Length: 172
Length: 279
Image 1: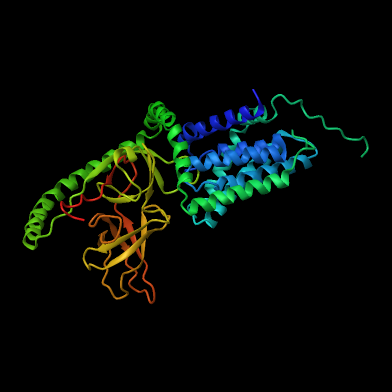
Image 2: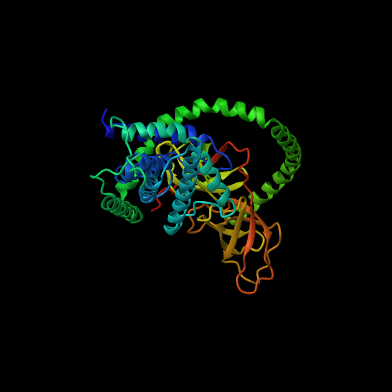
């Protein structure tokens, strides 16, 4: 199966999961942002260009599912994927806890940015009273499902490619 | 982890994607129909899967509510029993009032509003985190529903249809900050424009009502009709704070009559049928 087909399969599966099971699971009104975490992880594993492309289509599908204008999430997800990819390339080493915290921050930043862009376009996505709680809850819920999504996204964007080997000069 | 490949061109790619997204947004705001159709098509394609998932998860949800919500349910039942007893008393008074009203209406030759409605089941919140003050219901264009139609419960106005697909619709609740409805104060007959505040159960009237108008606490509001998309005389709520001391701009707080807590069904009000021989 080619990488493109794998990405399409992962995106469509995620769309169905977001529309069905994940919509039922809500804490304080917040739910998992599955398409957003796919965008973030696509940037992490696939690099800036491939990550941005996957993120754009994830955003378009998310826009079709939720009641927002087409292009809103597609506007936010690609820069998020590129930013994550850029940060990932600057990290000296990776630790699970640090990755989880980075993912949490990226998800919270992504949700905030979507809300801010939504406001710019005249939408009122959140209650001012519950805004912070909802963002934190949604970010934590999103991070909590990262492990299985991570495997799927890695398989989709890197499947078939050899693992990267980083070379560092001794003493540099 | 990803290493930067020589072929990666992140900046031009990102720029192209951003321009594409902005173009889509602009076209959508200009009302380009194919984009709406694309979004609706995606939702219609996954609709059978969603319906199946709803059916499969319903028993799980019921069991969950039965285990963890039993005490709340028992208290709610007790409250409803008290309410029912009170309503039976009120019903007797209403019957007498209705008879008097009908007699008066027939004397002045005004037909009492009689709505056709479609009963819809509440499915819950729509997907995503962009759904504050929105709920999803189980009927759509296949059942004759259209965007903008009023949604009511037994207690009064609930909201309006915001987005209608083939077999599902989104209801924008009256508390949504973008919601607007023309209202009439029943006692003073003053009319104003009420809007959602983003706070559960609360509307606000900030225009239309005169500064010197006599508005009492607990005064009932109904929809004003006229040019509004909502039919007239649907109960909206009661005045909670009439703001009698306003100097420049009056801001009347209204408590919404309809309470969505524990509701499963709503009614969508269909437009009144055009009279025969009318335009």
